[in-house]
Image (cartoon, rainbow, N blue to C red; front, side, top):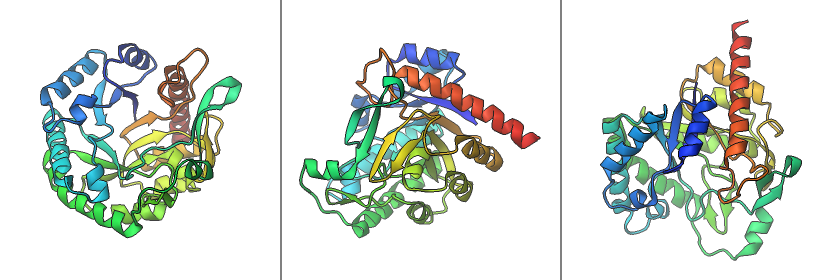
Length: 320
């Protein structure tokens, strides 16, 4: 298992703190200018890789992908978006960056109804309540399950050959929150069975899964059993936890949610997972800005230590 953290351009202090905490790999968010460019700036991505390497970090994952709303909604212009995505995949292949994390959530991506709820000791956490979200605005779209599956098939047919040639793994993130729909827009990656259906659409080695523990927990899944179910398709892990279920949940510190995190870590060890894992959606702690909910620094440092401790314990338990 490789310990990774999510970094935006220019986060020098954060990346040095993460390295001091034992992180070895970077999950990199492209600058907005790059994600919207018609052709990816390969030199810019190469510079980012070199800057991260100078601080001791290997650039292992790019997350998220450039915008592709036309692809997800089946609109005119989707082929231009796919060409831009293919350019990114080709650049990653040339630079040896192995994993691209993406989602297939149309119109509404990562969605929370609240980002300022009180957590343990006065920390700030995010949460989601479907009724509150639906009441806040009327449905403005209608995209069915069948539509979304057809659009996903088009996407896979377009990008998997390029990913195979480049040696880049496309790692599908489940829908967050995993509810049937949001304001008329279907959410198809909402259950373990639907994820299995998506993965069954191609056995390409480039077609893999981002196992977002918190999202599978909101689905009500048995986390260790689901890790084992997808053992041969997990390329990347988001390590987090929640209390509640898909239509009504709050995010938590990593040691106080509904999941048996040690049992989850034992499952990763048992399946021999050796890819990158990053902590995800940590609470904002005392004295920090909540400008980027889930991605302030102190909560992630706490989570890294907890994650590493679980891993050492799970490895020792497996060896005994």
